[in-house]
Image (cartoon, rainbow, N blue to C red; front, top):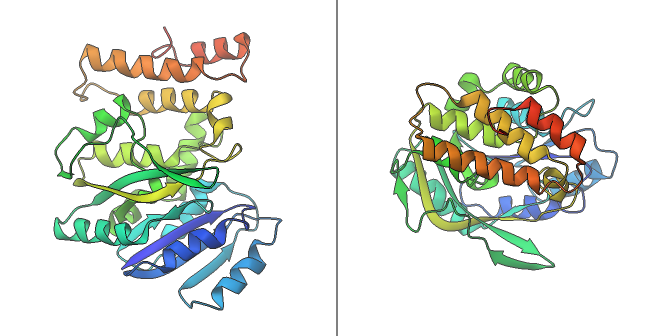
Amino acid sequence: MLSILIPSFNNSKYLPIAVASALSLKNLGEIIIIDDNSIDDTKVVVKELQRHSDKIRYFKNKKNIGVGFSFIKAIKLSKFSYILMCNSDDFFIPNNIDKLLEFLMKHKLDLAYGKMAIQKEGKVYKYKHPGYKNKDYINDRDEFKDLFIFDMYMPSFGTIMKSSILKKFYNAKYMFDLNQSFGSRFKAHDYDLFLNLSKKRKKIGFLNEFVCVWKPEQNSQSGNDYFQTGSAARENAFLFGRYYDKDCTFDLRDIKIIKQRINKKLNLASKLNLLQKEKIYQEFPYIFN
């Protein structure tokens, strides 16, 4: 059974769509909504949703702690064997999430992911990430290296994970240390988690189906602001420094591709001036040289 974990902040407008898509899952055990101290009508909206299902559990943070800590709080509260996160402004393709769980269980995987579609101007489009393969696979690539080469191609809300694996190490201390090491609140906590699991050689599988739909918003964690302000480039550079070591099987060509990809992100950061970019160059000289 699945525990669906939904961190939410001031997003009552779209939350019902996310919840409705989760309620349509065949193997749904529970939906845990972590309200990150919203000031909109999230609580009222959730109370109405709870009238239609006793599987919805609601918790409100006393202060805003961010998506990462809210996700970890939900993991701790979860009761079922498999975990799937959903951003409150995105939604699932239920039949294919059901297939993804069956795929994971059939092949005894630690983690299984599918493809993400994208919604723009009310229409849903297939999204072709360069990291996607053209067929299903099970442990058939160097996932750790490819996550650096192709960027974050595993959608957090299209990736089912074993709860038992996460509960061994992924806790508030982990997130606190990550933020402290970065120097501020780290946004790409899902990218960090997948790099961590892939470096540990967990058994990972890919189902060649679209399983979820992303609705990019300007100010969302993965929206335009994240890229235009240089946050995406800075966090990518930080993650390379965090995980790359002598045991990595990267050759010079791999490293060149990774550096070029992250440099391109910084070049596209239109809200940064030259002095701000120079500061990032100096902060991560192993990438920007």
